[in-house]
Image (cartoon, rainbow, N blue to C red; front, top):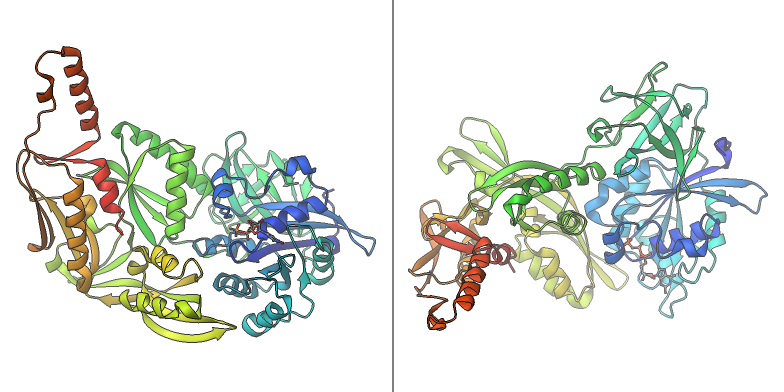
Length: 600
Ligand SMILES: Nc1nc2c(ncn2[C@@H]2O[C@H](COP(=O)(O)OP(=O)(O)OP(=O)(O)O)[C@@H](O)[C@H]2O)c(=O)[nH]1
């Protein structure tokens, strides 16, 4: 089974906007090729992570090898790479694409082209893919295949005459997709006798097998027992197992050119397995490495702290494990006066942040406090140095800073005309600069430049609520620009609370400072003395709230008599204390941080 001739291999990925039916189609293809029995299918096979299933989004790119007896009498090997649809995972999309020769472009025939469809299809075009448009959900009464076909031609700019019309849900015309794959996608190229060149597409940690590497062989052959070398890191390993995903793992003797599969080689550190690296043979190395991927750079950072300080080590181990599965995620130890020991973590975007946070809580059972997400600022110092700032609490003294730059993005928003006005207002409020406004059928496509800082700050939520969920949003990084930014410190009883410090444009500093102070006033329990809650820029106070004093003796109502009841009350109070953080004389409950950090 390992010796599929090149002309009978097709490697493809499926690209689509979220919810247009990519995973459902993948399931149908797997089913149609008999890889799994219906009972084994049980829901969507490719979205294996629990969290993914619940949210219905695809996080990790995965691959499946299918066998398809085509109408031309040949039996083809089809390697399907699943790709995530969301913009935060654009990086994973690009590496999946680099491992394939073609793409199925799935468009929901009742919805039409969306912002994310465009973003993904341009990546596929960049990767020189042959693209087969697929119109899905034609079972829906609202499906308008003709209109969407025209839209694909007009907006995406690829021919859509022979787009395959299907219903992934009912299974209608799945064979049409399989035939299009074998007839329209090019076969991979490569020479089985050449020195090995394998593209390291992905690596993750499996609790039974250790580190697993997903590889696409470009040239040569990779066998069990080979000694491989990673061309970038120079690390060498003996290959214990070579295999393919059916989608269950199945070991094979070797993988030849054009094939995709996995390697298991008792690798201890995933740090040696850089995605995009070239795998070659130690005793007969390739001369050149394959063109790799651009490393992913985290654009959003936030602090993660265990609610229970005893969980610090567990948090460290858990982050390490997640990182094995997700090289795009970064973390480093951090201490906060307010929150204790924790980690500063870097993410590709907000959804990525949310997913990691949720996985920590679900898979590792950790109770965490996350500080407000911050973008990476560039501090141009008076002495000519340029420092990157990931954490507002680390901002250098203002007198030493010449100027500050912040990252900008170019965002495309596709929205129904009736909501356009509110979207334009939102973008303007967020310091956006309009670049373009066109129409895609009955919807407006507006392109804005926006400071990323304003987008990490509840932009998605506002966009969603303003458009009743009907807007689609896609962005890419668009350079750095100088900006009038200030750090706002929050002081409780004149003590700065580092975890609440944030950076904002001067024009919105006061409003946001006020909002936090007002919120904290409601969240911090009254104490025996008056407490000032202030927001300041440097030494200048820009907002203030005062929390009145209160005397409170929980045992007062117990008339001295019932000792056990009294003890219970005191214990209860002690319990409560554990969840408090001490600030000078003031105790702030964890819930206050959580709520204050969740600004809305
Ligand atoms: N009526 C109908 N519904 C479909 C069809 N294909 C998929 N769906 C539904 O559309 C929704 C989204 O499908 P998914 O396959 O999860 O979409 P996806 O593109 O994989 O979504 P992400 O993984 O989030 O990118 C699900 O509720 C499916 O049941 C179809 O052909 N017809």
